[in-house]
Image 1: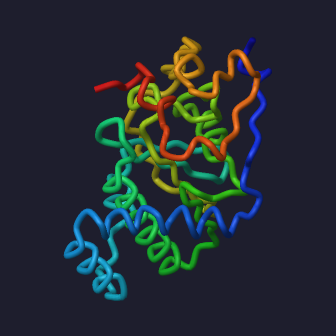
Image 2 (image 1 turned 90 degrees about the horizontal axis):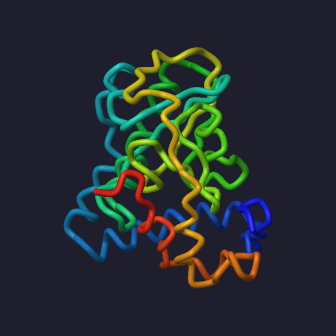
Image 3 (image 1 turned 180 degrees about the horizontal axis):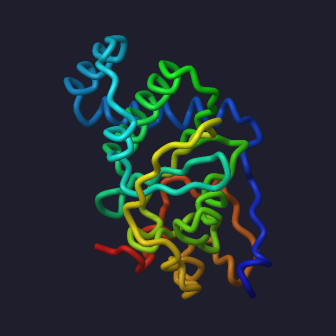
Length: 211
């Protein structure tokens, strides 16, 4: 059975719920891990920091690409588990990007890793930052699926600084992720996404970018 025949069900339809709970859970995990650091960040959130230059800001993501007027930014994890620090870096990056674009009076739209109406993995694939796994995850040719993707649609061009070689592949169709999935999609032909929370075997097993 090919990846095209696997049906995904249990998708959350409410975009608001996706963004609220998707951002709330990492914040609560960071609070649990280090309450003092969480409280420091919370107090500093409202403080106006000096604006970085666009060149300085674009040094922060680990890779980036462009498709039309949409820019995609890659933030890699350290290790197989969901990287809270990478999530926080991506949020800080987007916050500073938004402040900078507002200061420059540009028209823009920001995409978080949880933007429900924009398929960032598909856009990143079109921007040649990797290709899609059978589960629809972007597999970066160097970092594998252990990444977060953010984006921004901007009316004027940014000086994109390519950090990785484009067009180097990603997913090799080894189907290892399908084989280790406890829902046995190769046999049943479907995956219930509501049962995927906390599993991440499809990410951990991927040999691309494995450290």
